[in-house]
Image (tube, rainbow, N blue to C red; front, top):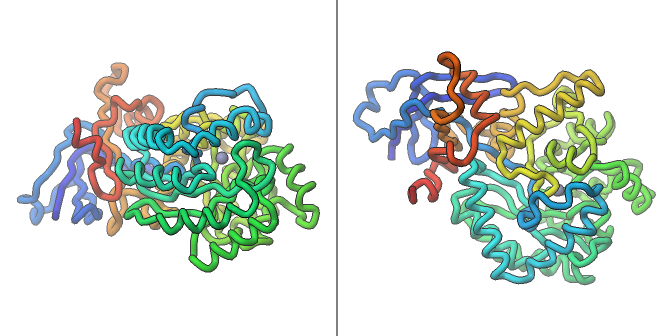
Length: 420
Ligand SMILES: [Zn+2]
C-alpha cells in the first residue's frame, strides 16, 4: 500500500549533516521509504496522504543501552558511585523480576513510555529471569518498538540478582526457545566481566558463534571497575581482552560506556567492528567521567547513544542527546576535543542507532521508516519566524511527550497514536 506523509522534513542522513525540506513529502510503500520529495510527483497524486501541516517530521530515536528492570528505580541513588550503586539499589530491584505480574506491569509501562517518547528501536538489558525477559519482549512488540533484548547472564559478584551455579546457560537456552517475535530479537548479554565466571563467558561465546547471535555488555566505565577486572583476569592485558578471549568481541558487539577506552582499546573496537554506546547522563550521574566520543569517531569506531536507565535519569532520548552535547562541552573544557554539535549528537541518537540494525538512517530509501512527528506550536513564542534548522534545535532541546503527534516504527504508525 502506498501512503504519503506531508510535513516539514528534518533529518541527518550523515554525521554532521542536517537536511531540511519545508512542507515536503515522504512516500511509503508498505512502510518502506520509496522517496523523499520537496514536491509530490504527479504519479502519487491519487494516493492517500496524511497531512501533518506545519509539524516537524524527524528521525525517531534509537536507544542502544538501557536496563529495563531498573525502570522502577529511575531517579534514585544518584549520589552513589557505580559499584556501591549496583549493590545498594540495582541488584535488589532486579531480583524482583522473578514475580511475573510485577514484570508485566513494569514492562508494559516502560514499553509505552519508550514509544510515546519517540524511541522506536532499542538494545536492552533485562534481568537474569528468562520468563520476565520474554514478557519484556512481548510488551515491546505490542507497543510497536523493535530491536534487541537480552536475558542477563551473571553468575558471580552480583548479590541478590545472581544466578544459581549451573543455571545460567540452561535458562538462556530456554529463553532463546521462547523468542518468537517479529520485531524484537534476542541478544546475548553477559552483564560485565566481574559478574561472569570464565566458564560462563566461554559458553556464551560458543552460543554466539553457533547461533550467530549478537552480543552486548559493558566496557571501561569507571577506574574502580577496570582495576577489579585486572584483579579477576590477570592474564588479560586490557579489559576488552576479557571479552575477546571468549569469542564475544566481534562485529556488531555493543559495548556500553567506553569512558576510559584508550587508543589501544579503541583500535581493537574499530578493527573488530565493535560499537561503543555512549551514555553521557549515566557517566556524569555516577561521576564516571566524560567519554572520548570525538576521538572514537575520528578513529573510525562506530558510536551510538544509550539512556542507560537507571544510571541515566532520563528515558527520553532527546534529553540523552542534549546530555551528550553537554558532556562533550565539559570534555572540550578538559581536553580541547571539539564538542558535539546538535546535528552531530542527534545523528548519534537516531541514524547511528538505526544503522546498527539495518544500515538505515531511519529516513532512508528502501528501508522501513522510523520517524517522530513533532508539533512545536506550543513551544515558547519565538521573537521572529524561525528557520527549520532553528525549529529542529528547539525540538531537540524542548520536546516533551505532549509535543509528539505521531511515531512511526518499522514503517507503521505506533499503536498508541491510533488510540488518540
Ligand atoms: Zn548499563
